[in-house]
Length: 411
Ligand code: KG4
Ligand code: ZN
Image (cartoon, rainbow, N blue to C red; front, side):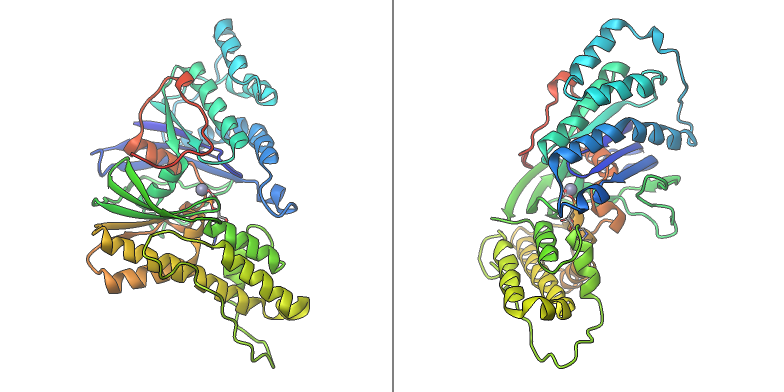
């Protein structure tokens, strides 16, 4: 099955085309194209993602990125030709105009760039329908609906967190060096094997909007067994970065500065931060108190000393987050007797978390399988949406798919 996948839940506009062959449970995947266009530069000056700006950027970029995805895919036999769009019935164009009535700029671009394309050889269009920022989600959903109507293809609505859950299944060989997520470089490869997962499986999903421990009995049957009661782990990284005067997104900035060699002279101060909820018997998390602890620490230290001590503060903060995440994940894996542990979400790019989760799992649960995503698959992308669609997708008519900003993983 050939899937075109679209992801616009937050601040990345992403489109991927992937083909799945072989057994459904352990397919082989050909990544025909995989494009992620990041809006970080747009949001950075505001210190975080501005929903309406994200919406506008998606609206501006989608048709261009789709064209790029088609161009990229063509080298592996993707059939794609320009046709005369005068053949498209007027009733169809009217229907598309109605679907895109709230995205007039996108409709104009759609008419110019998408209508002339020949119907591509894809079997379904997968699209993230939640959770995420409502205005951003709707652009992607409406774009997918318009494509479904234009090409008479079914839609597969995909939960964004299911995408993160499945992201570690694509194990990319290190020799594929051009597996780059950017507008100009994508993965180009022959077939890659998708890793097998043994159920029950536990997923630790850590992103900018979510921190959850998800138990899966089988493909598509999820239960959130624990989650954050306030800030998500990625959100805490972003907020602490702001307190320390580091740029958005905070995760990469904090982990980079935490790895710096400490060259602080005459500073005897030992920085210690709390590990919230580390000892509680549930599988929940809380990171807002930790952020506040950093805020008070920075206030007490003053601007100059905070800046000087930034590497130590960043390191201790990162350790605190990782300690809690690792401890609770291992406790849950033991309690639920799972066979596989998966790590996913933007924070899964964090080296300390990857290293410590792996080391501790090997030590405490040596017989379970542990899969982490390639760091380039940790953040938002559309390839993970295609993979989630392969395993759990249900084809639907275009008018049965709606954005749901508060969608949760469930059975
Ligand atoms: O999954 P994602 O790309 O978007 C959401 O769905 O939220 O996650 C983005 C989050 C941001 O909060 C970012 O600071 C965090 O992932 N992040 C990291 C790292 N790279 C990204 N957090 C910690 N360490 C990193 N290396
Ligand atoms: Zn995400």
